[in-house]
Image (tube, rainbow, N blue to C red; front, side):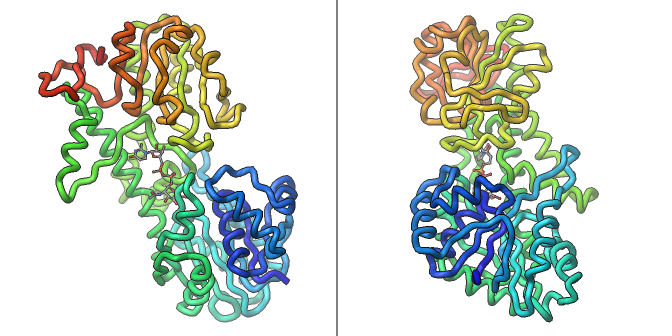
Length: 442
Ligand code: SAJ
């Protein structure tokens, strides 16, 4: 019998199951995707995360980690399934409900059930607890129930799972203490104890806080664009203040967490969350705003081609989910442009209705304008010659202050930088770029 059953073998469940197994627990990983189950049983993973391959291999080779499509009786159940939003921004708890229903037939008195998925406040007791209570066993009396959110940064998952501090929110103190003892087997960070509602709010606040802070940076970037200021320099100077840490402006906020989680709070508290809704709107309109600035140069002909560089939602990862690139692409298509998207790391395919290619030359071929969305290192050293060779037009947008603007301008390109002003700023030093009129830095 497995000691721990981890339900959901995605970017949180798989590393968690593997680390629990390498810590000595007998772990059963469960996923409805047969391919994921088969590849895990073969000691492999399709997820590209630093160090994950080695941990998975070690866990499977030790005999402590196996996978199946259905849960089996265990001491502990850890739920790590996605909690997306609907197109109308309502929370979709179907996966959580479905695994809770799958656990119910194998639940035994004395078990511990942990929800890790980011969830609206009250989900642990009101959704998972109530579904499991239909067995006749009561949470807190017959089995223990906890909410223990993950905090890992995609791209650095294994390191963060091991080293980050955690919050363990028990429906009862005993449940929290049991969960804490489990996580302590592989987690070197501190593990704080709270109740389930506090832990749920805590997780939602963490990601919402980041969303709002990125929105503030984006608003500052817009103000800089209208004021003839270089936001990148202004932020680096403001951040010299000991209590100021302004984040980086950009094309918006992607990923499956930060653009999603604020909606959980907005849906539950519509009257209180105007600020959060405004932040969402700012971040979602950064791409379309860059497009408007590019189109405003009149350098893109009607029906022209726009090349988008970067489909991953952030630098150096291969994850194309909820990338800000798609809002920009949709706005461009809406404006009658042809769009081609490149990414050096994302598996070629169709995402959110948009094709993504690994062929940069083909993406740029015949483009009237190109716009950088993701600050991958592969783009950092792109030469102006490469752009010149492939593009028809001479217009480049940069949402991350990432390209070699000086070289591009010398080669005859007009460069529109996100966060760079529309009126000339006095040249105060070599590092301050010269910014031209009309929304375009030249
Ligand atoms: N971004 C900016 N400016 C910045 C920082 C980020 O525009 O200064 C953009 C990124 O380009 C990206 C998006 O924000 O599009 C999100 O990236 P991220 O690195 O901030 O976060 P995620 O989504 O990869 O992971 C977040 C993390 N949460 C926090 O930092 C509060 C992580 O710790 C969580 O575990 C994860 O969400 C999750 O699963 O909830």
